[in-house]
Image (cartoon, rainbow, N blue to C red; front, top):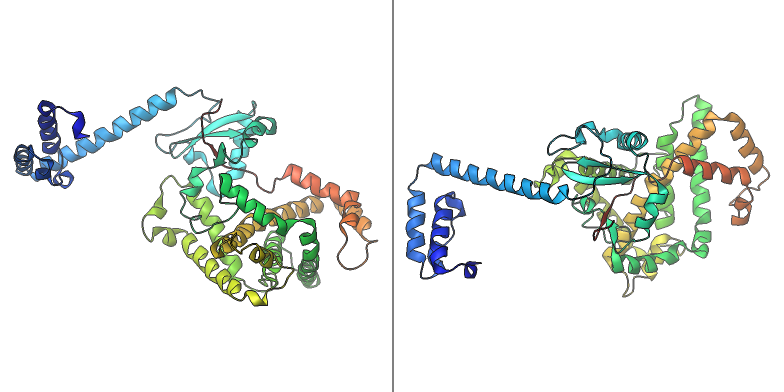
Length: 414
């Protein structure tokens, strides 16, 4: 940048900057060439000033930098077209004060009902502008631009919880397309057919746990049972062995729970506390939980000779040769747990909730399936259960498995 100044302009500008800056900002002034002596004299004069004065100059410089940055940001954002805004935003933290982190979905849904009559409104979280689209018709043009022009939110990448995970749910652009092509065979019709026996076994375990509570007169917490069922189901399909979390404490399920909650806590935090070494583990434990999961899954993959053919991990290993690396296989397995565990358990819990509120609907579903034989049902039989299919369709319509998605545009969009 020095080449941009003429000699007559350079020395006064540097002298003024160095004299007004705290000592820690001064680096090797004599190395600048023929102006070294003049600059060095300026530095010595600055260092002879009282320390309090230097600190004051430094604080003034920092405050001025913040004001200039804020002014530039205001100039930039003031030119944007604004949608209806949720009122009550505060400087720096925006609407964060109004957001109940433990009930974030309910809070945003309430804002959508109140401010989203046009299908779109905006909020500010920790100084970041977020445009919320709450109408499917409004969202379709943006979803059609995935994954190249519309990508996952950069805010998620900054949480420090996805760097280790190399898989389809963390990839973008062409990398996402490549991962999707390699992972897709594990979810085709033949693969799903091979998973049925494992699913049937875990469903039997779930019914056994419910029966135990019925016999003892104990209330059944279906939210926790559905979460344990999902964890055991996915682990059974992935590795051929389940976590056993339906009947006992599961360290793996506990770590996934810690990881999931730490992600939400960091996403909603106005301060990036996890960037301070050790503070993330102290406050939310997400990094340590992810490290333990990686260690556990690495040990399972190292015993690949024990894997059964009808497991998700084995199908990913078959795609590994020169296509998926060892780390990408582990990353995709963890992705499937993260993407499938809470979504499945939430959908099940909502279905149980709606059925519990409508006993006549319970009886109708029970009457429909009573004619099926024991053992796994064929896909054609499941499709013929019109009432059961209707229950799932209505549950998903009323309560989405993933109530919010976070994206960022890669270029200006009108």
